[in-house]
Length: 119
View (spheres, rainbow, N blue to C red):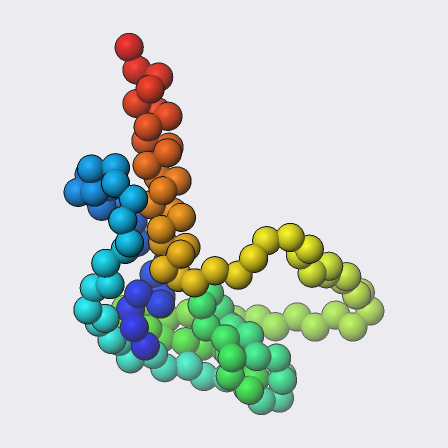
């Protein structure tokens, strides 16, 4: 799995300083790969798991990636209490590249707003 898929918030002010506040397309660095190991149970047929990990044919109970292990320690099923979850009715799906560009632009905006308040 590409390491960039596991790290959505890898952002630095240095990224902005190198851009000179110009809106540019995000350069695609060479993808580094890591091994991900996931343990799941098909007895709980929910294709979910911790953080970015999901999509297996059962609930993910343990996942290891790089130097991090996420482990399920307790499962509580409560059939008596139902929770209604409404799907969002606004917003749109975007690509990771568009997301990164949006974050960079907002960081520039935040920096410019903060700098404008000085002296």
